[in-house]
Structures are given as structure tokens and as C-alpha cells.
Image (cartoon, rainbow, N blue to C red; front, top):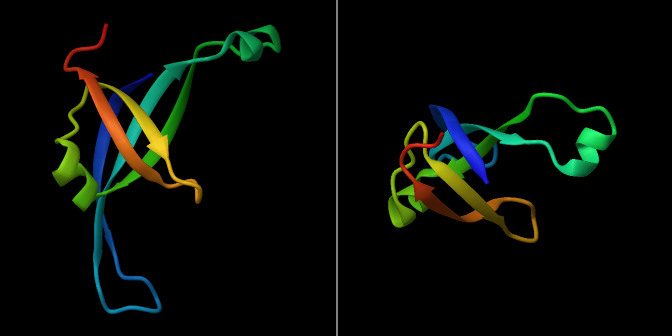
Length: 89
């Protein structure tokens, strides 16, 4: 599970299209796995995860401090997410 620590709107037009793509960059942190800790990792892991705006509109608005999990499709892109709570500890 991840904790949302930041959000940044995103929009771009792919080179092979004239259609603008809207989304949001979700900045998250999570604890390292036990294996990573055994290999010397300290602190928390931080990532940026991109979500299409249409997916956020369908599944719910993401807010800073939400606890969230992501599901990915076979191409490694987020195809679903679940918000677990509004205020992480």
C-alpha cells in the first residue's frame, strides 16, 4: 500500500496524434520490503505513478494523504486503483 504525498496535473499531446491526453502524476511513498531492508535499504521508497484523468474520474478523486493500491495491465500501466482511507498515519 502507498501513501499519497503529492499530486501534479499532466497534459500532453502524443507526436502521432492531435488529441490531448489528461492525467495526474501521483507521488507516493511506501515502506521497503523485508528483502530490501535485508539488503541495506533504509527509510521509505518513493515513486511517481501516472494515472489517466478518465480513470480517476471513473474510480474516484485521489487526494494527498490517501492510502492507495494500484493494479496494472500487461503493459505496465495503471488500469485500476483503490483508495483505502483518507488520512494515513
